[in-house]
Image (cartoon, rainbow, N blue to C red; front, side):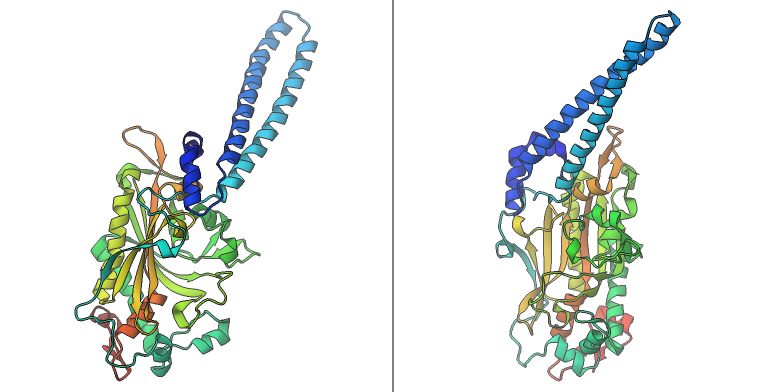
Length: 425
């Protein structure tokens, strides 16, 4: 959530920032409500001060035998007016909250200004030794490979749950599990993260804290009877671990990593590319989440991206790094890098990870603070997260880039101790 003080002191900057993010400019409306709210606070405080002074005077008047009828009547009017103003103040605050809760974060100054994904900037490309975009045999796509090798069954997944719910079989299921365990172990042992195994269902307040609700509620699955939501990413439960808490500066940075299944309705996505793993409603993901001091957050973002890159380099998967423009940033992000892996069958790059710095945006919504040792005062923390990584699109690249002319799959060396086999045939 945006800081009202930021809007009040830098209205032009906020207006431009919202425009750059393709969002509605709410600055004038918010400032008008804020002015009214502050006016109501002033009026209420003055009346309460007057009531307190008179309340202290009344016993003295009674003790002196003076008539308090008139002054008691006046205080009744003051109390009624305070009640009326308190109601108006609550209404103004609720209206302000309603607007701010739908208002996105602003892009950081280092983010390129742009309208859509077409304006994103490729900042890096990593290709394994000996890699070529040209193949000397006809490559099969991941759906064909999965069917031929009997490791993926999208048809039966559809029968069981509907389209977008994949079914892994045999060595395919083992490979998926191996990939998850490898990524968790790598982040824990090589990058120093603490493992979390979070709940897969969360309450509304948790979704609100990380910015999924109310703006993107249509994309969420809901269990209305219990007021719970299947998570779209482990970012939600892991970030909410410290909701309504004040951390100590010595604890920072806190680095968590966790696996979860993820569930997304993706309302409005129908008609887009949906073959196999390219668009699913359930998928697996290893998520990295950081809680850091504000002055360190952009440095920590670069380290977060490197942690995700290390996984892909260990797997020998070709990838590129994109710096997202302002118009393609998510609702909550101030800066984001996407990591895309290469699919030879689709002949295009596929998003496998997003690494974002939310600055204090999520922390304000979830009330996550730390006590600054210098000032001794609590301040909002900065939160970051990144896919480390999502397995669905990564599995596409893993299968297609490791296929042989005979249609077998060579398992990456780092996964072989997890799978117990070197070849899928």
